[in-house]
Picture 1 (cartoon, rainbow, N blue to C red):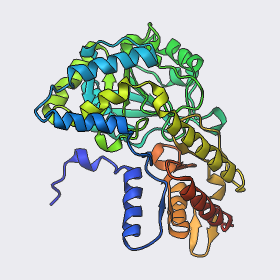
Picture 2 (picture 1 turned 120 degrees about the vertical axis):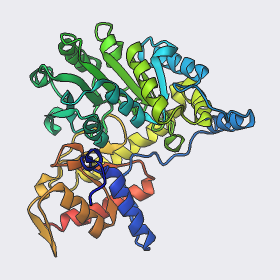
Picture 3 (picture 1 turned 90 degrees about the horizontal axis):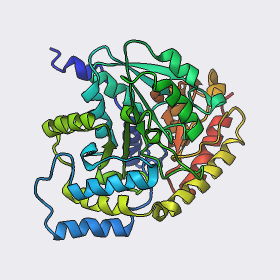
Picture 4 (picture 1 turned 180 degrees about the vertical axis):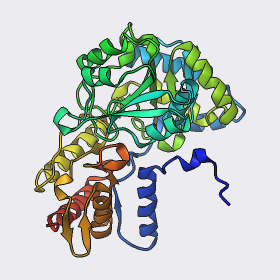
Length: 397
């Protein structure tokens, strides 16, 4: 007898987590697997942040905390938004959650009713579509490609809007493509959105400081769409704090209050120690993470150089995050031994089984002609992985 809810049965498992699990299983069998599947910095959390977390333990921050986060942390986040993004969010407009993923889920569940449509440029982070489904909304995908740097145009956005459109969600820098929207490009999208004040825009900026363009702009900084934008951020990526589990939003007050209401019934407040550590992270000048950013840039350049040596790879130059997202459709309908490749799912498994390197199918991100390769790993591992991938792909004919 089927006892699992329809809600759960409608959901897909996260492809990135599934591939990481498969890689761990193979490693546990003694197989030498290089995992380039998860989006997790290989750096350790900076010491000044760890010290603040330890201080929180010593000062007995071990009691229940406000659902939306400690006041002093929200003040620090408010200052960060002003400093880095030019956005004025009061402390009451900020909600601290257990990672950016929960922050996004809170917003979607707060605003989406059954049948509401949510515009999602593809490629997109794997969880966007599933969170929308959880809220019984309908994701409406706008396909992009390497030709336009995986970005949507104002006309494409306009064409996707109808009377059911309630929301748009995107990331910049983008997971998985690494694309970064410029101020000019965001202005052109805002010129469309401002005509639809009932549409809320979720701007996922979790990779904000892993950005190679030399500048960054948040769509929420435009005054005419400020009341339509929810800005998502956190400490996981830029500060190598994935395990601390802390994200946050800046939002119109009614949305922040709705998210606090939902969170109060699910998780309540985020770990008190993580919150103390996050104060140090968001209060620090962004230059403290430039060493990590520069290391990611060097790795990106190496990966691009190696991929460009492989016949059939088509790739852009990502300007942020720590992923490359090559179009690998030239390898479809090719074979090697018992393997015949017909799609990116099969290519990812072929690379795993023959090269012993874990990557993620682009199908999971809404771009079935691509695969995602994370370079959040040491240069030594990346060199080995790229040699293995090149051999595996060159063997296909």
